[in-house]
Each structure stands twice: as structure tokens, then as C-alpha cells.
Image (cartoon, rainbow, N blue to C red; front, side, top):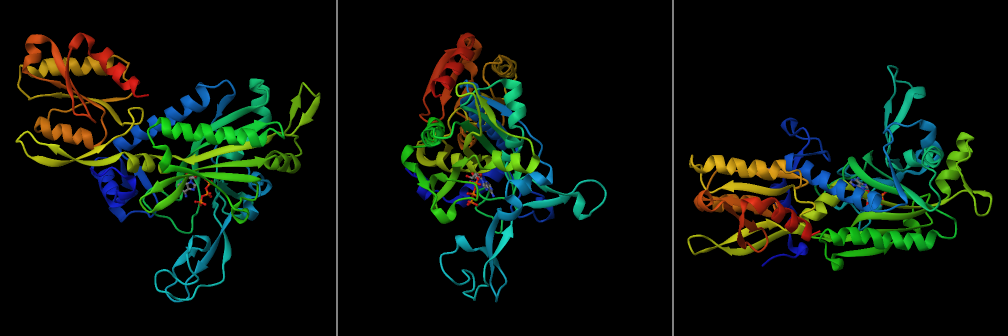
Length: 448
Ligand code: ATP
């Protein structure tokens, strides 16, 4: 059995994603736009599930968190104050022979990795996308597409404190698109120029920051492991001094062991009071917190867990991808491909499969499907599929990670019962239609 993520071939994941409707290349009929991807019918379900799980864990399950959804376009002064106009850049080098461009800090040696040519001196390349607000394309109307969602949180700090009366420590969570004009992209949806982020800015009293930083690292790792990733496929890596962003006192990356080596899935930074102070100075509006215990205004420190959704989806898919030998109905064996996705993330929660399209069976199968779908208790997508042989349909559901299939067969007409088939064990259990929704809900929740 091959189940080690280290052995999964990325090409297999990319092809499965396209074939089954997880991820499509953007504008494919025009030849595609590099580093832009679209989530297909199953991809959107998985993204929704991922966001819901994160929101439930990070916001709804705690008493110290609130949400925000700020605009992508902000006042350009915000990006000057935050330091992004001057410092949000990567070192760009260009090969003098083949003219390919690279991020210098991603290269292993001093020469072009493609043609071994000589490389230019590095120059700092600002990664913010620029556009124009209004009908006139002039410098005065220049605005930026946000490269992180965080600044929308900082500039709203006073608004949120006044509206919610939150006391320190507390945090603001936000899910939204970000744009970075990356020098090099690649590895499917690992590094793109447009991506969606899960971000938290957690405000603490200065001095409490290091302890809280550690706590957030533990909490974030627990989120991944609760969703099925083995702890030994994750590690924490502190940033070296020369890697640290202009605002950070310390940053740890949570890394995952990809087929091509360790790579970042999430960064957890201690941004200190850098951003609130910078916006206070630039705007003239004090962004601070009145501490009722000390009767003083303080500028909180900030701990920031920050993750990309596409990267998380890809990581969960790679982690779940499994090939194993399974017996066929004809007594032979074949390779079964399955995604051992946690039920919380699985794009299809339950598939209802009539054994055949026989006209006696069809109305009952339809009734079973509606009972499950309309119960409102499955919390996700329920699918009906009556095409091809039942064996083929099980394989198709396995391949997209559907945890449970419900089969309606000819016995169902007499015993008012159906079969639940488990994706991972392939065990089949007979349950009465009356108790079906209870049984499905219980099994899906048990895995949580
Ligand atoms: P890198 O050094 O790899 O460019 P970074 O350290 O600048 O990344 P952060 O600013 O820490 O990245 O971003 C936080 C998270 O956002 C990352 O852990 C990653 O999950 C996601 N992310 C960042 N850049 C991209 C991108 N270009 N495409 C997809 N996801 C991204």
C-alpha cells in the first residue's frame, strides 16, 4: 500500500483535480493564465468546508475572537504607512543568457538553474499589484490590490474595539483574497499571484506576546492534526534573522512534508506594535487600547497566524491521496485510488446510489435521497448517482473522498432498509431507512 505523502506524484493530484472538478486552470480555452486557478464544483465545496472549519474553531469556539471582512482596495497611504510600498519586495535576478527570472533566495547556486548562465545582480522587486481608481490613469489615482488582509484589520482596530467592547487579549479573524506579483510561481496551487487567506490578528498586552505566540502555534497545529494530518508530517521552523519581514520580531512557519520536501503552509508572526503605531503616526488617529486595570492607553502587540487556502486545500489533498490494492467483484485485485479526507473537508458527504435504474427502485431511491438531503443535518453536499455499475460508482466516490455511500437495492423494497458503505474500510452495514439520517449524522460526527 502506498500511503506516504512523500511518494505521491503531484501530477496525479493535478490530473485528479481537473478530471473530477476540484481545480481548473484559469482561462484554459485561451491557453491558461499562469499561476491563476479556478475551483470547480468539488473544489468550492472543499474550500467552503475548510473555511467553515477554521471559522468554527478560531472564532465560534472561543470567546476572545470576532470577525471582519475588509475591502480589497484600501487608501494607498495605508500601504505606505505599513511599509509595503518600500519593503514588500523579493530579490529578483535575471539570467544574462536565457533571460529567465528567479527569486534569488529560492536558488541553490550562483548560476541559472535552467541554462547555467550568469545571473544579474539582484534588485528588489515590489510584489504589490497596482491599479487605478476611477477613469483617469494617473499617479494620483493609483491604488494597490492588498497583498495581505491584515492591514484591513489594523486600520479598523478602533472601530472594532468600540463596537464590540472587547478587552485584551482578543483577536480579529478575516478570510479574503490577496494578490502578490510573485517573481516565480508554481507547484500547482502552492504559489499563485491571486490567492485567498485565512488571517488572524491577535492583540495582547506587550510582554504577553511570546507566551501567546507559542499558544497560537499549538492551536494552529492542532487544527491541522484534528483534520487528519499526522503530526510527524508537520514541523515548526523559526525564521532566520535575514528572512524576517520588516514588521516581525519573530516568525515561525508551520511546514508540511511535501513530495518535494518541507514547505510552508502557514506563518505565525509576532508583529509587535509595528502596524498599529505606524498607522497611528501616519493617520494622526491614535490606534490604542485603554487598559482599565492600569488606567493607561497601551498599544497592543500582535500575533498573526496566516495561511493560504489554496495551499491548505492542496496539502490536504496530497495528504489524503492513497492507492491500495482492493478486491474486485470478479475475484481479482485492482488498484483503488481514494482520498482519505476528513469528513469535515470532504466535498461530498454522502452519495446515494440506487443499485440499478430499474423503475421499481427509482422512486424509492429518490425518496431516500430527498430524506437525506432535505434533513438539513448533513451539513454539506449530498449527491445522487445512478450511472454505470455500482462498483464503478463506489470507485468514483472513493476517488473524491466521499466518506459514506448509501446503496438502495431490491431488498430495500421489502425490508425498508439500505446499505451504508464506508470509504476507508469498505465495510457495508444494513440500516433501516427510518434511522438512516441518524446513523449518517452519527458516523460523520464521530470522525470529528
Ligand atoms: P514565501 O516566503 O513562501 O513567499 P511568505 O513567507 O511571504 O511566503 P506569508 O506572508 O507568511 O508568506 O504568507 C502567509 C501564508 O499565505 C503562507 O503560509 C501561505 O500559506 C500563503 N501564501 C503566501 N503567498 C502565497 C502565494 N503566492 N500563493 C498561495 N499562497 C500563498
